[in-house]
Image 1: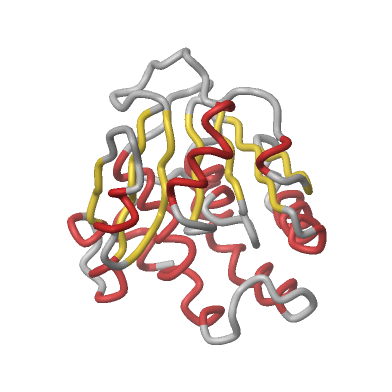
Image 2 (image 1 turned 120 degrees about the horizontal axis):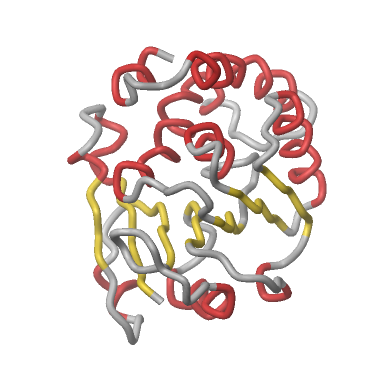
Length: 206
């Protein structure tokens, strides 16, 4: 939790409480349904919560924003961002039902009324969103193909509507597959921990 306070010092008391509750909730549910690797559960706040919140350093979300989290797994990046932006709406989807069950239980326990969780494949989703967020579920080019139909034309942020994608490593080859523009934000510019040295947010305007 110290990491969260370090980089997000202006949280409300309610937000601090909810972030603080995450560890016990994930310990409990991860013992029943493995949504986080066993070694990572001990570094939950660094490798999952703060990592997810890197998106907020690139683009803070305004009230009324709709977000789609594709391949959310155990609820990342959607749940930490939903705590951070209570006036925005988050639709968390995954094709694996047991993972969505965990997401629903955790969102309910945290009283996150701005989170909807659904078992569905991204290709079958209807509806439109200002931003699609995700954590490295596949290569970026096919991912764009899945979700570009879901991007709203109503753009009201500094960044134009599109994808904010958490990835790591050398992305030169992968980004060369894209026909449109993209931009890389290095998370090491925002967070000083070693874990973030190779972590990035890839922004693809659509």
